[in-house]
Length: 304
Ligand code: HSE
Image (cartoon, rainbow, N blue to C red; front, top):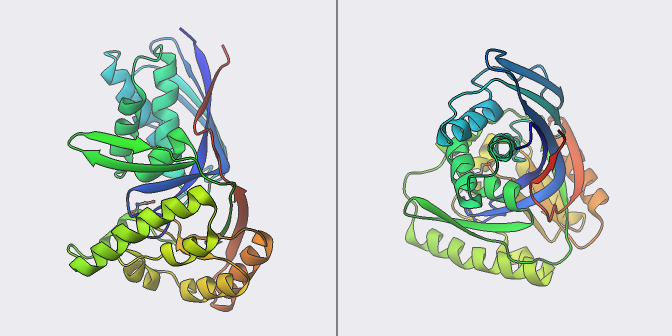
């Protein structure tokens, strides 16, 4: 069995408009975690550089460590002494799947150190449970476009092949936790809104498969979460409309936000810049990214 492994896990944008909690897309920004077993009694060693370094506890509250511990418990080893080194390029708490990447890195690295005893379904279920919802976790694990749905205790997933795609992302300097963004949602929704989203979700998948941006433009619309969340993000409406004016075919809240993801066949830098200016004119700072789709999902290498 390996004593040291490295996993590289992609960021992700979830929901893609109507596919609330069931669509995710892996994007080319990464967290890399090197995990190794230490001698019993050596405890926990945690180091982190990059996005969020210094803001993340290195103890058993840490999501990577909790995720690894869930695997040690499942494999009957109990919490073990380990060293965790993180290089993180995914902004934390911004709707780009940083916590899913953390959960996936923890379960996948620990499973590799344990000899790969857990199945991909089990790893997904654990990461999704630790994170609270499955869409980012599924994209981070499997890469590309992922659809995921619960069937009893199981999570079913599929990874339709999609046309080449890049995403322009605007990340406003707004603090919005996923918990707050979920709190803003109603407990019940009108039947016609549910029907609207079901149809649109199917067409989002089709549009991404075929690279049909005209279809994506009307399909990537939503009545289940964005109407309730947009008010939590100053400048959201202005950024959406600026992206469209700059040539975006479709624009959606990235996961629970606050980031905004825009889709277009070309002109991504211009679209990202237009969203940034719109946020800044609304008094909100903004960073931008133009990212390819990650098609591989988590990658594991043995380093010792
Ligand atoms: N589907 C989740 C939500 C994703 O929208 O709350 C959170 O990143």
